[in-house]
Image (cartoon, rainbow, N blue to C red; front, side, top):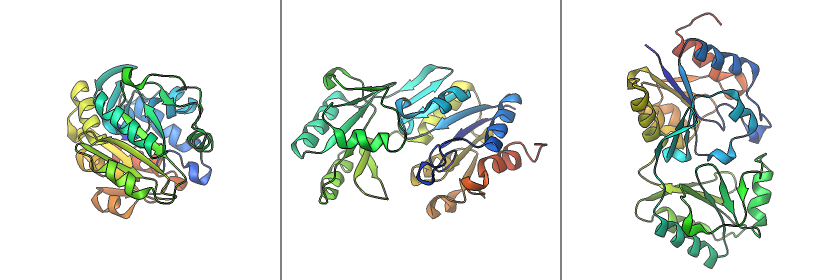
Length: 268
């Protein structure tokens, strides 16, 4: 039976906060081994397509579960898409502008950033995200938007962020390190729902699915797949719901997990 394996990016395959911006050779070798045996490999991430760097795009993943499940791509084709209601996007933009909070709109293959939003531009270039797919002039009323991000240097922004997170049908997370940015998306979509769309399309039973992750937005994903694998560097609450904990990203934990749990201890 062919299997489908889903990988979070940040903290699982790479760790930009610790300077690890590339997939290590042992992990690349293990990913290739999966494909050689006919299994499907996906990235499952909160990122939009525009935040996937050249290495991730050129590696040859079979598909992508993007923006926490709001968009699913398989072999470069959209097999599921669920943009936010346009009136909700406009409401959020107006609220952010009123509060002088910068925002970015995430579409299927591009993201949209006002040309005068320098704080957010600096934030993304600082974490090695290219601005090549950033569109600077746009009419937000005509766009299909799946997710939004907000950024500000204001110290009193938490109340504003919480008000958006608790809007009907919405949810989101703030960056745990500096609390300056918020990712906001539809509550009904998660990495788990995106994975289920991919599995249904491929005809692969849930029992033959695996997922690797490290963060709180990976909880539903690990609980939904047949085999949920948490990185040792992951959040304690995620490790508590995982079927197994693999070594940390800095010990090539994804490679170890592939060989032990997905390939059943096969030769490396």
